[in-house]
Image (tube, rainbow, N blue to C red):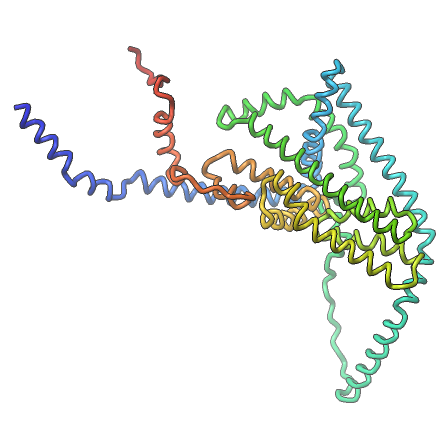
Length: 414
């Protein structure tokens, strides 16, 4: 009897019926596909709503993002002051006040330079007019000859009046997200206070974050990665900006440009700005050279130097010292600069790289967002095979990944 039972079980195991059952699509798999499509649509809807909110509530978003960025950046200094037995509130207040004082001194220095530039503006204007006078005369002569030729060929006809809608100017684009002058002043006034409160309540915010996500994500690891990303981004920009500022200052000093040190430092740092940085870095030393040089040699040297430094920084320094620290690819960084620049203007350009890297860190938290993480990553990782399955299958497979000695409670009492 036992031998017959064994043969029957072997025949049952070799029967092709289970294969036919697995080939038939089950209702669970179809429902999982439907749920995944609904989740994708909801994700797209949430992303669109967040974009609309970020566009129309840009002043609030910029204030919160900038305060959080500064709080994460200055937190190590607060920790070091705490080790010297200084209360955290006093340390945070001292750092915020020191930052306000530094910005005030920088603004005072820039105001002095702007006033001196305003006094020399007529000289700049006359010099520029003398330089472009031959070109202007040629353009006027060409326009007159073209107008005479048109009148000879076609008789004059009454042209209906057409009104065109004015397009936004560059100043409107630059202040997008900040709004008017009052909006900028409100942001500048709120950011120090919000940064101070974030620095003082760091531990409470960590507890709230852990309780909010209910241990679904590793909040401590996410905060650690966020701190490393922001500190690496700032350190990389300081390294690249220092190299470019030193090189620009040395070239301007060798040419004999007055104020070579402040001009070189400003030009080198401005060259770090995306898109507009190259124009600003070129305009500043060239405008200063207009009052000193009448030959084209210094202008050619300054232009070639800044262009060379821009190419070197974009292709060598930035990928080495910044891209590796934020772990996002050049295509993702460029698209992020375009998007955040469209959304928030200059502030979006300045915060585009860390914001894009923040989105990648968020995508790293959940396996279902691994494709978005690979799209933004500097070196994409191969997608694991188990990620393709639904969350239900993953939850069923989790007990099998636990150590063998660990017991899983099933709700039954032995």
